[in-house]
Length: 85
Image 1 (cartoon, one colour):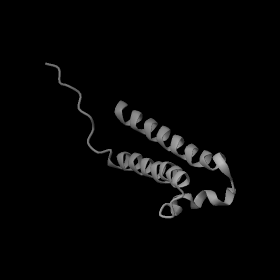
Image 2 (cartoon, rainbow, N blue to C red; image 1 turned 30 degrees about the vertical axis):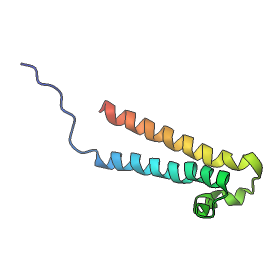
Image 3 (tube, helix red, strand yellow; image 1 turned 180 degrees about the vertical axis):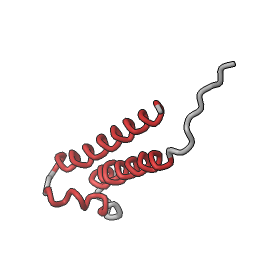
């Protein structure tokens, strides 16, 4: 009689890392873009890491967009790796 394979218990640390990377991407990527688009003073903390670049116009959106894409990609890779184990 064949038994179905069971996933190993645990993986909480990997799940925490995936969630943390996702939150960083959403806060410093997505919210920073929203803050730039709406000129919101409430979201100034999300734009702080990019101020030293002194970019103007549409170029201000590139660093937060790169952070968002990279964080989502890394979270996807970690999630895919978690599924294969």
